[in-house]
Image (tube, rainbow, N blue to C red; front, side):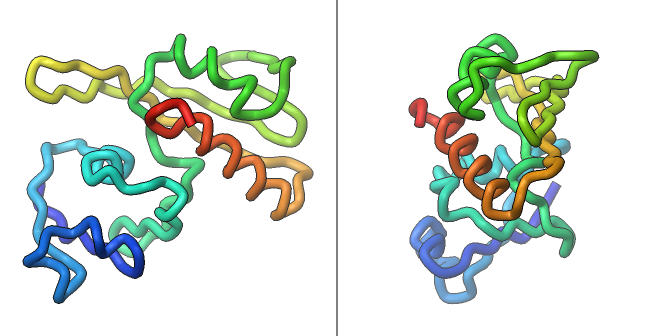
Amino acid sequence: MRITFKLFAQLQDYLPAEAKKTNAFALELPEGSSVAQVIESFSLPPRLVHLVLLDGAFIPPAERDATITRQDFLRILPAATGEAQICESAGMFFGRGWSLRLTAMPPLEIGSVRLERHRVEIEFDGLTEEEQERFMQRFTLHYQRGGG
């Protein structure tokens, strides 16, 4: 599949030299590639990736997928949420003011490397916008490549 990949502001430094004048270039991706895969492939710092549009629709960080094993995801989850006690029911995880669904996706295959992939969806209930932002900052920090 062919997409137009655009980066602005500080992220322009991650563009190939020939694309810096227009902030964009055509990119060929395997069918079914995700937003998170493109972000990871360019080693874009997650803390700088604020506005992601796909066909003009905003894709919030809470709806991007992750290449991580389920076991590793669950191991990191208490630290990422700041909660020692997390309830699980029917594939959903619950904490104070949030719920999370972790859905297995087809693996990412790069040459002979095969990476598990999951879609992560987070919903908030009863948290202020500021509390949601703090939650997402902490969550993103703990799941960044390199361990946060």
